[in-house]
Picture 1 (cartoon, rainbow, N blue to C red):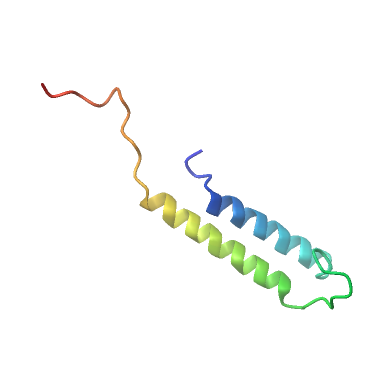
Picture 2: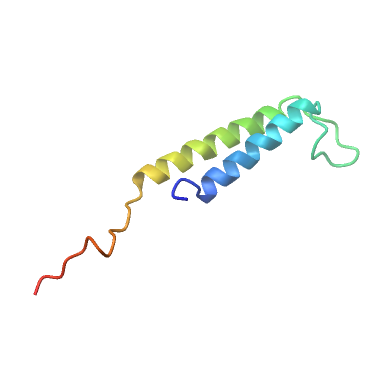
Length: 75
C-alpha cells in the first residue's frame, strides 16, 4: 500500500481517460456541442504520466516509520 498514493491513483485515472479518448476519437468527456480537440487525449496521457512520475518521486522521498519492535528505550 506504500506505492499507492493519490498521485499514482490520479495518474492511473488520467492515463485511463487518455486511452479511452484515443479509442473513442476524443468523444469521451466532451460537452454537448463541443468540437473534439485532436490533442486532448495526448494532454490527458501527458498529465497522467506526469502524475505517475510525481508519485514515484514522492514515494522515494518519503521516509518509513520505524517499527515499534525495532525501537529500544534507553534508560
